[in-house]
Image 1 (cartoon, rainbow, N blue to C red):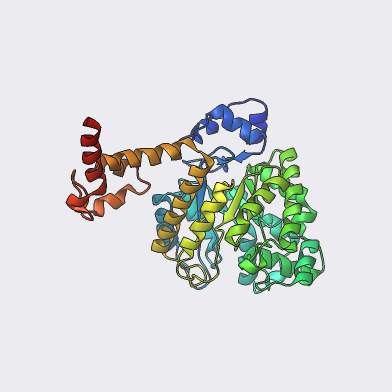
Image 2: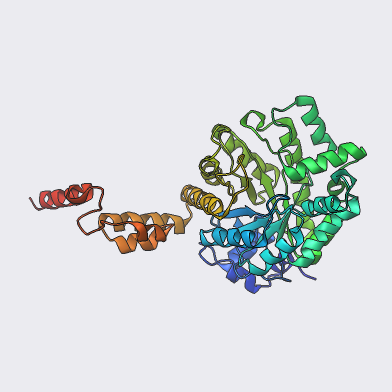
Length: 428
């Protein structure tokens, strides 16, 4: 079976290239070239066939992902479907179902059935849930169960999967030797680290990477190589453990491309503002330009309740340096279980961040949008402003708008006064 990379390399113009170009500055031929070279991915499992495939990578608009999913104590299929609707309705280009409740399989099936956008998962969570339901500790998960979870999600139609393949014994040794304030904050990373320590064995996904590639190729799933060593505090950013994992991920990117498997790489995490650019550039260098998927990054550890804003600040900077895919953060990060309004707020913040990054990247559609808004503001054209805005519905809640100005300034509108004065001055 030919994968999307195979078809791109053979010059076969799969219809998916045309569909994924919607709203982009590049055409299907250019997108096919980027996919063939591994500089962009289109997460798309043909067994499900999501309605809105997107391209992620070089020269494309920065995309936004929203994490949803249940926990053991908060589990409702209907709640997750409401969160899915809130995410997509506010501009998310993809969602990840990170369910760990007892009904995780039912939730994933519902999300896959209702999502018009690509769906990602972390299959090892499924393995962890199965262990809990069978009364076993998570470290008793077998290697076969880990790979079977990946295969199950491929069979169900998942478009991309996060697998923590770079968290090796060597990376773990750096963590132990160096010490961190926050150790490991990646849930999948902590499961893998605990398994490795318990069994005194190498990460199965790293040791038998070829088996993972075979599964991903069979179901045409995009691999998102997870950052199990991502820093959980600004103090821990860009340390030896994080970089050691990134080096391994860079090697694995090459193996994915050779196997015709689409791949992107995940990144931090909690990163001080001044280190974000270096982190993005390092990833791009070590991972041969593979699309970069970042969580936030969070630029301060002290703003619980407003971490969606913290993540948007970091996301805008990361995108401006070349990050391709922003994972949102909700206001409930570090506080509790998010509801649909938290999801909506998190997506909106990341959509703004992605747009800011696109302006810095010179994405023409983003630049045009800002020009259209500015011209409409000067002309007091509220309808045109609404049409060009990132969130048009906000205009429906505003009163006092007129051709003379808004309710804020009224007859003292700065632009109207300036236009009249400049107009009369030019006639003199």
